[in-house]
Structures are given as C-alpha cells and as structure tokens.
Image (cartoon, rainbow, N blue to C red):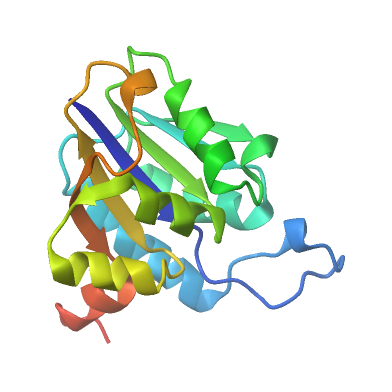
Length: 176
C-alpha cells in the first residue's frame, strides 16, 4: 500500500518585496492555517516519511510550520516542483524510491489541484464535487494506492481517504 498526501502551500501575500512570485511569503492567516493542517496531519496514519517540497518561499514557510508536526518526515526541496504541471508532479511521485511508503508533496496550483483530481478514482460524490471545485491554500488531499511501488501509481486509481481544508477544520472545532 502507498499513501500520498498532496498539500497546497499556505495563503500568501499578494506580492513579494522583490516583485518575484517565487519570493512571496505566507501571511498571518497562512501561518494559522499551516498550524491547523499540521496538527490534523499529525493525527493521520501512517505519517509521511518523505516530503517533496517546491523551493518557493511560500512552500518553505508552510513547511517550517507543518514540518514539526511530522517529526519523522524528511524534507527535500525541489526547484522542479515550483509551479509544476500535474504531469511533472506525477512523474516525480512515480520516481520516489520504493523504500518510502508514505509521501507528502507540498506545492502549487494549478498543477497540484489538477493532479489531485486526476489521481482520485474512488471517492464519494461529495468529496469528488468538493475536490473538483478547488484545492484551496493549505488544503490536503490524502490518497491510498494498493500497489507495492510508486511506479505503479496511476491516474484515476487512487482511493481518496480525505480532502481537508483549514476552513473545514475551523468549522469543526472551537477555533475562532
């Protein structure tokens, strides 16, 4: 069994001081949402062993908050995941060593959203409808694959275990 978590970066400032998209930082809501999703991920099993993360500032900052909730997870920052297409992310996932059973990918829309939609084959109608709409900032998609290697992960064959957003987590708790 392979476990995959697709996580979009936290909410960001509209523009960086440098004017470069790559340098945009997360804003106060993004920091709060990162902690919420980090705590939620910490309660999930199995925990990811490896996180493949875009090298953008906003993904770095999201990981700085989420990462401590996942102490057994090793992080790798990849420039190839910055604004990567769904197919590029998919190829990256399929190249993960087989020793890794649970993987987290932290990246950007539209590629991450498109990939999540295309990977989830088995899901209830409400989950599919919600996922079709958007993968919001700090949204997490958790998928399972009944395969022994990452190279066997295929489109429309994943089982959607969860699609969680900070908005849902706030609504289901006493978080203001």
